[in-house]
Image (cartoon, rainbow, N blue to C red; front, side, top):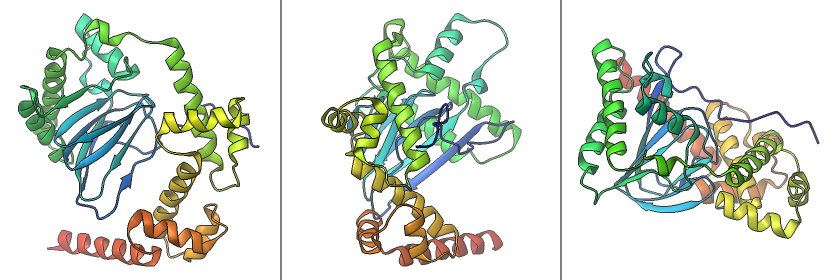
Amino acid sequence: MAALKKELKEIAKHGSSVYPLAGYICRGKKFNINIGMHWHPEVEINRFESGKFVYNYAMQDYELEGPCIAITPGNVLHNVMIKRGSDHSSVLFNPSMIEFSYFDEVQNRLIKFLTQGGKKMPPIITADMECFAKADKILSYIINNSTKTDGPTRLRIKAHLIDLLAIMYENGIFLAESLSRNDDFEHKQQKIKDLLTFINEHYAEKITMNDAANYLNVSRQYFCRYFKKSTGMSFVDFINDLRLRRASQEIALTSKSITDIALDHGFDNIGYFFKLYKQKFGQTPLCYRKTKAAEENDYGDSLAT
């Protein structure tokens, strides 16, 4: 097996170096969207607008129904499963955006939480909480205006971020007792991060459950339970889901043959690939490619008008 990199984080760039913030919207898809287990230094605030979701926070699954809001501090292992027909949006930002040059105890505590996490339970604002309507309105403004580049809007977004975090502070999310850390839990989370790094580097190869169990130096039986509990998916389902997501990106962005893409992403049985692909995306790979091409054309036409 190839040597493992020190750490694999999400490599997507959120915003720019001068304005490290980006908003994302996913609404009304006809198939489940599985973002995939990952972590990144940016803070992620999820707006579960309507529908059903599975939110994995620090290796624990939570079944959620919209509307609600969840915040994921930087470097915490997490995943979002958006169920078919559900509406979801989010904003990711670097905590440095809300730092001030002078020392402030509240800021120090807040930045520590945003960059390191703190507790195993996810910070969630539910619709029945008194503060939800105000928090949701603020988050909606941030996401819907995240692509604007004028100075006043960007300044308002920064102010809104601080206001949103203040609301969460008022409701006990950043209290000292909620920031306690557990060394054993951190060790387990790091082990999963290392394993996911290995899987991401070798997913197109024939990785067996024994390979993964040996990598963690545990028995196959223990590994099955541990992996399912940590990621919410069986090892085989996780590998197949990762392969399908990576393959779908290449299908949408290139004209390479579907068969070659399937083989390049670890599927030796093309019929099995087509079956899993249709189960996940609700259409064949070729239809998916045509749909994405049509969406790009529609987007180009809208810019031209």
